[in-house]
Length: 468
Ligand code: AMP
Ligand code: ZN
Image (cartoon, rainbow, N blue to C red; front, side, top):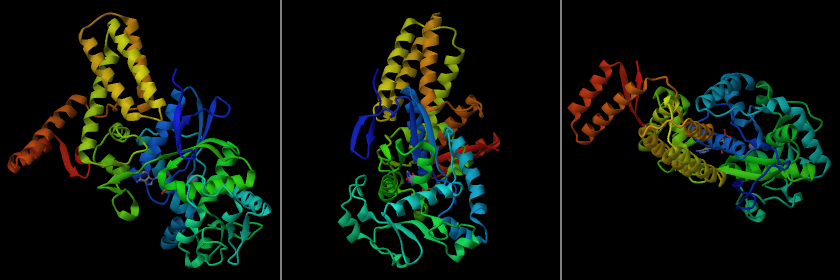
């Protein structure tokens, strides 16, 4: 059987991966900052991690996954100050939205979702350890910084030359008291707005709050141990976030922090990263409003390898809606079939081999989905041929269940499939009419759909519809 291989950002190579104890993968995934609902770019990363988690199990391992929730940071405090709330009041509703959204996208539950504010004692202990080891210092402003010059391994993940880092760095106005422009805050001295938002804690080295990088190191080591198997996140976290996590953790323990680092590429819109500050975000509520089924978004994201950038384009989402509809139709057929042919069993066995080989080769989801569709085509042909081989049918069902156990692409039956197909046909007709500039016809189709109780909407992800 093929062994799992993953691209490790630390070595810049695709290499064999197995957990240190041979059984359980201890995995840390950087989670959302909960001050705004996560957008689809964030969810591309979380879906890549869902695929990673499910592939680890396909490879035969147990998984203990931690996804932290960042509930104290600059943006949250700014929001709290603007609305006269505490940080908890800002983050609590967003945390609930995050879980609802990820469930909508069928992202499996991680074993732990620690909130940063529940791990303050562990964070204080880590800062103290770094001060004791002489790699951190308390500056005039009362904050504690990590001295990157004291940690020889600094830059090993991002491979940035430290001199480059220094000369290229901007020195923020309020960070004048650092020894080195690139030294980063482990602990930020409390300011009045932190106190007002209940974002300040007592510590032996002064009242304050944790820095973002510190939060992850402390929670990862507390829940998973000093050396973890796998650490994942979006590509933008390589520097400085993950570089700094390594520095703090390894300077404290003297042990390697994570054995393997995996990073997912960006979701783009018109060639730019989907990001709040660019103003091009779409979120899960938009999917719900536009009646885009979750499996279609999973399918759309999985059409591109996680280490390649992916543009969010309406045609792609529309094609994925159609693709998962086909998968759903096949799932129903397989569930109600009475028997198969010996060739059905052969097709299942081949599909399983191809599917596993693709995913175990650094999560090649596009190839895994190709294996699924080859199987659907062959299985449909065999089911057309009839046959009464119960074992062959059972084999086909088992293989399909294994594949869907990783990809999770069968649409739920909220909407009657036939009705959905008929709406899709009318939408295709309307699209053709619009392309032919026959707008009267296009409008007539819209009216006809409305008469059937269907409201359509032309949006950035194509035309979507909902039943009124
Ligand atoms: P944040 O809440 O900003 O810390 O981001 C949460 C996760 O989403 C991180 O792993 C980021 O790297 C990731 N992320 C942010 N924007 C994008 C994007 N456009 N595409 C893919 N991942 C993203
Ligand atoms: Zn992190």
